[in-house]
Image 1 (tube, rainbow, N blue to C red):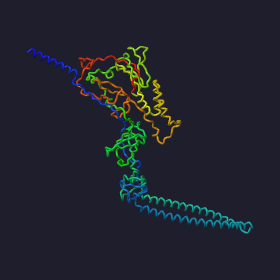
Image 2 (image 1 turned 90 degrees about the horizontal axis):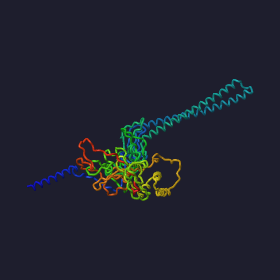
Image 3 (image 1 turned 90 degrees about the vertical axis):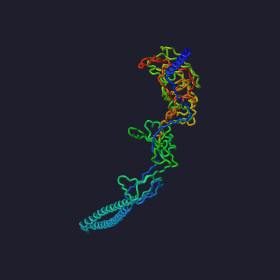
Image 4 (image 1 turned 135 degrees about the horizontal axis):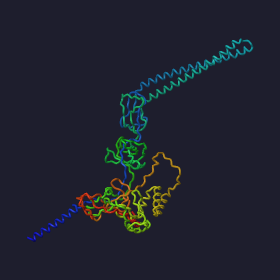
Length: 577
């Protein structure tokens, strides 16, 4: 009996101990979700919507009013330039033309009569001049009275005045003939306008009139037809948001889809970025014209296109999931994993005063082309002879070639030495830069004391075949699109977490372009196939952090230690990344 009681007590003690451990651990182990580092292509795109339309669209109208007498084209009709596609009733214009032609005939007759009267007046003037000459001779010999001489002189003056008047009458008749001729020409043009011809080769996409319909051309010509020039070449008018228009350049590759063919992807090229803004409900967009081939005539005017403009593309590069870059472990996550909380994620860590200088970073392995440098150990407390803390890396700063300690002012620990650059990878990126970007890169490298001879030789070699003296005057451009500067190569920084030996380990990364799902990895800390943490699920009740005791009052948080010191100085140049 005593033996049975002893066994029951032992079983009870074991159960109580297991329960206590279970309660302290907070339930089952959490599940760490990971995703692999892969290698493949990354395309950075800008999305937009647009409308398809023909490259050239002509509205065919009527310049005269009248009734539609005949139609020679319908929807989807293929027409040629000069082909008659409609006729208006010409009877009214024909009658007007006949009347004006009659007026022209009358004006010509009046001109002929005026010219005849002019000739008669000229003869009368010649006769008066001859009589006046004879009268002067007779008067000189005193054979003719003075009154007769004066009468002959008056007859000459009267004939000259009649001649001038008749000449004016002839000019007036000539003007009337010219005016009548112009009226005839105008009436003929109006009559010709009753025949509507196609101005270009193309396809009729719209017809707005029927036979018998009255067309009234007053202040504006009515539109009878709309003709698209060539539907094998179309355009997409896309509206690019103002936040993305700075990344759009002519010549960029475009892919888009339409609802009519949801499984087909069409391609195009950016042709123009228009400067005129379009503001709709306080949203500013800019029209972007995209040239699109349409050899199979699948695309039709007016279709809505979901456009993706390719900003940058990288092929066969390391890719880290964006979810891994967004993962930020909390102290509860570390507690669930029974792991000490790193100082950079401790709540309130480093809020105290400036602590002592951290220990120096470890000596990194020798880089391929970076000069050797040895990190000197720092004393445990700052003094006047100590150098200042190393500056913290800026997210927008270019990658550093030499190891250096992190400046964790509130982190509580100094970062280790960071490795140098990978020469092959850096040279590959150097070759993809423009000449101006290469010069800026070399200048930054020299400022840091790095060896730039290999980059300078590569720059000279690439520029030698096509070396031409640059003119100081700016080159002329047909449009402003040719003056857009090339897009800069942008690098960002991020952090991913590895789950190794049941511990979360941070990895600082240099990142390139992103497609929203994956980001390009420029540094070499990660390799293909490695798993990065994307999230932690299954965290149960709140657990006690390792090394921290609970408090009796739930309103009293655990005590905070003093602020962490600065990171130690960097180690030597490590393995390039």
